[in-house]
Length: 331
Image 1 (cartoon, one colour):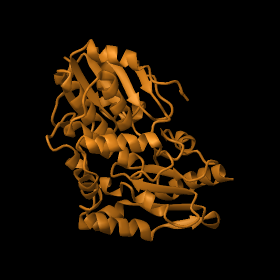
Image 2: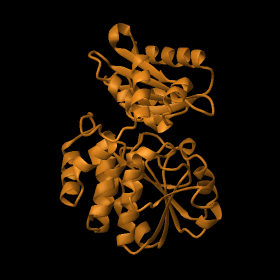
Image 3: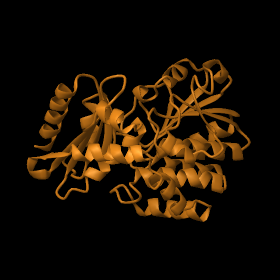
Image 4: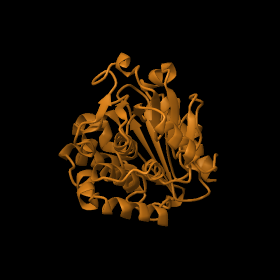
């Protein structure tokens, strides 16, 4: 794991010496991904750079509030691959893994642009990019804020709002162990620059659809515990989406609700994908279980306390295989 500080002078040099930027992030984008892209776009544009944001997937409906100016594009929907050839710098934010780029991976592989990564996750694939990473950072959004400081860009409300959403969500609204004094000082700076915590919280957590609530009910009803309550797990199956009419993005944050059970140390959720297989999410409250290592064993990655992966196969076999790995990690 790279624990060297980010070499900000090199980052500044790259930004100042180029004019046309393409920003992208991971599939199933969350607020840290989207907020980091939008915040970075605002910073670059303050320096009179040309910026386009393109992801492999469209923004989930429940997160569209973060993009009131509709800056976020989906590859093949809003933008064609040949429209991206003019970029000079391709910046990947909030991921360092090929598997998480979806169809944008082909763009990253084929581009002639200079490539750089700004990320806070543990581990990385070789994308032929310059790395600007700090796994100790609680959110990529906070690294984007640092970038603004080093570039001498004043934080406007348009930059502050998405960056506050990025940091707040990746810290569980400042309740995760990754929250530090730096986190709270950064949040205070963003609030003073125009971010409204109340408005962002309302948009994130107080605009549920009936379908989303019904899906959560089905997921929570399936919750089970093992190992004297230290392990909790549940699943969202295709039948749950069909019965509720909910969207895949409606599973966001459900796993954190299972951590409310007293005595829980590790939580797992299985989310069945419409194309087959399952998305896995892991959470840990104990230093003895590293979620990033668990996820890595299934081709994924993330952080020590929170990570994710994907796995193919039928539900019974997947459940047995994953829970066996979690039990072994907890021994």
